[in-house]
Every structure is written in C-alpha cells, then in structure tokens.
Image 1 (cartoon, rainbow, N blue to C red):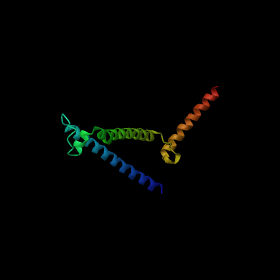
Image 2: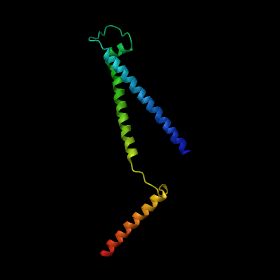
Image 3: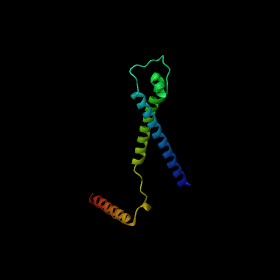
Length: 125
C-alpha cells in the first residue's frame, strides 16, 4: 500500500511540474511577443485588434495576468527548491540490518578499539 502511495505522489509531482513549466513558458512567450511588437505610441482611442494588442493597450491586465503570476510562480518554485534541498540533505539513520556483514565486522572492530582505548585512559587515571 505504501509503494502505491509513493507511486501516486511521484505521478502527482510530475504532473504538477509539467503544468508549472508549461505555464511559465506560456507566460514568458506571450510577454516577449507583447514587448517585441510594442509600437512607439499607443493610441487608446483605437479598439484592440487582437489579444496582444489588447495587452499592450491595457497594462493593468498585463500586470495582473502575466507579471504577477510569473513572480508568484518564481517565489513558489524557490520555496519548493529550498524545501526539497533541506529534505534530501538530512542525514538518514543507518540501521544495523542495512549494513553488510563486512561493514558490521569493521564497525565491531572500531567499537572494540574505541572501548579499549577508553578503558586504558580510565586505568591510567
């Protein structure tokens, strides 16, 4: 059951990532087109002939629909990146049954050596 939940989370994260990237690309492309085709003088008395022209004549709509969402997505992505890095950089505890027999033997030798050196120090006092 736990493996199924993990698999569902991976699928959900993948879908959210694809939606996020697609939305960012769309917002950037429309913004670039709008800014590249910006005329020197905008006549507000002339009706808009298309979507890009409408955005050029109504900067408040452009700000609310394109600029602010891009900044919000940037902040959300930075916060998610920080969370992801912190989550993956945490040291995970190693269980004894995760070690191979060679690693167990090496650990046993190190512990015995450490204990014997501590005993020697206590005996000297």
